[in-house]
Image 1 (spheres, rainbow, N blue to C red):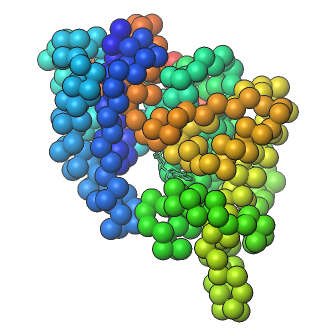
Image 2 (tube, helix red, strand yellow):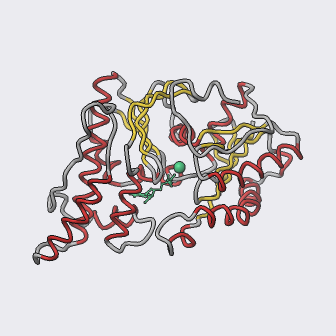
Image 3 (cartoon, rainbow, N blue to C red):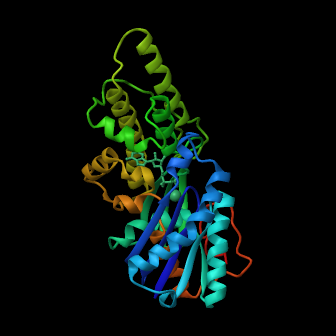
Length: 340
Ligand code: KG4
Ligand code: ZN
């Protein structure tokens, strides 16, 4: 079954063709980074308008790259939640129109589950596993028990990890989005040059919740203080120390979850999963087996949507024409099974 997967949940316009939930025939992503960089963040109105311009060429290129025609598409999967509503609606409207015109089955996919599926396009991974989604919009640690079922163990209570990278990068004048630039500079820095606090949450919170906004503030203040006092002003050292703190926090959380759940397979996902230090440190831990997607599958893409969508569509799941965009989703156990 050839599934067309579409993702317009944020600022990447993506379409892919995937066979049987596994073989990527093509995957096209039109980035909007340049348009949003001026504002140092995603402007929802600009994002949705750009999606309307990008969606048809991106879809056509996906067909061309795969060497297929419209008639070869068997079904359509499209991200319906969570995300920016205006952006999601562009992908949804396109998917519905194509499904209606060509009488194809349609399924509205959950973006979180799709990210956590991405690694399965490249490796056989058995359930259950621990899924760590670290992106610009999400930081979620979950126990994933099936392609459509997860139990959230913890989330960030404020900034997402990628957001913290982007805010630190913005402060350091490294451009937007800045995670990649921080990662790059960190490679020539000393990770023990600065000692940043690891934010502790008040008792009563879920044991796997995290906070990153205090760390971001600490980086900004400490650097200002050091500069004022004439001490270390090395950008690579700040980046390496900040990055190490983030990686240590995530690794400690996952090690705790491995110990307490007895699940030792960990699947990373999201833009920050492309961070070189994160990948290196997770690979080093002998008590866990880490999987992370290749770099193009870490960030938003249509292949993960088509891959996950295949399993729903093959089971007979169908969305109706009433399928709508949702900005937020309560991620509780079995949440996806009750949806159509
Ligand atoms: O998954 P993604 O493309 O979009 C969202 O759904 O949010 O993630 C984008 C985020 C941005 O915050 C970006 O700075 C971060 O991923 N990122 C990185 C790296 N590459 C991208 N963060 C740290 N290190 C990287 N190498
Ligand atoms: Zn995403």
